[in-house]
Amino acid sequence: MKNHSQTSPQKKSLSVKFHEYDSLSFFSVLSEDVKRYKGWKNALIYYGFWIVLLYRLSHCLHKNHLDYLAIIIQFVTKIITGCDISRKAVIGPKLSIFHPQSIFVGPYVKMGQSCTIGPNCFIGSSKSAADPDDYPVIDDKVFISSGAQILGCITIGEKTHIGPNAVVMKDVPANSIVAPPTSRIFSKEKFHDFSQNQ
View 1 (cartoon, rainbow, N blue to C red):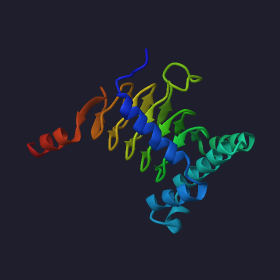
View 2: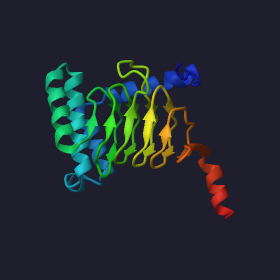
View 3: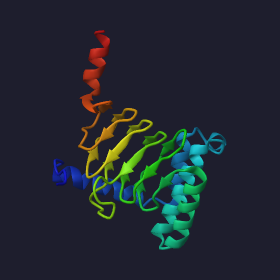
View 4: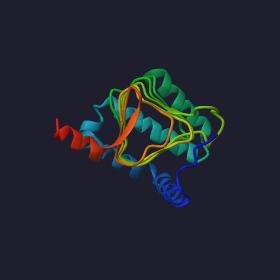
């Protein structure tokens, strides 16, 4: 049974946002990605940026009905880097990938702008890989730590931090921290207050 806890206005707002992200041109979205790496000079020496670049290229080709070329780029990227970011995934600008290794992002994943993905992460379906509705929707400025798994028809709110090795299979509200090993969810405000009292 799918999770439908999010209200219709929220879903509509996210849908409009992702449509806007997906309508950006290859060069405009790439120039925004470069800003996360403090300019072209730094970006070109970061391994993670090249994976972002190849994903952007494959996604652009896919959108322009050149899927055979897009598949080749995605496949070659996977063989060389071990990272498999689907050409069909919609990911907003300013994407940052650090220590890229064994990263999987499924074909119907939607991810907002200014997100960060660490190594050994799995973002995809929980039941049926062929079901477009069985994939996560991740809002803006989400930090996904190494080893995290985000699975199924769930929504991750903006400015959320997914902790290392967390397994997330239910909705997470905005401004949250998901803490392993039991993947507890609590607000950043409460976490800050607790830390100050220690």
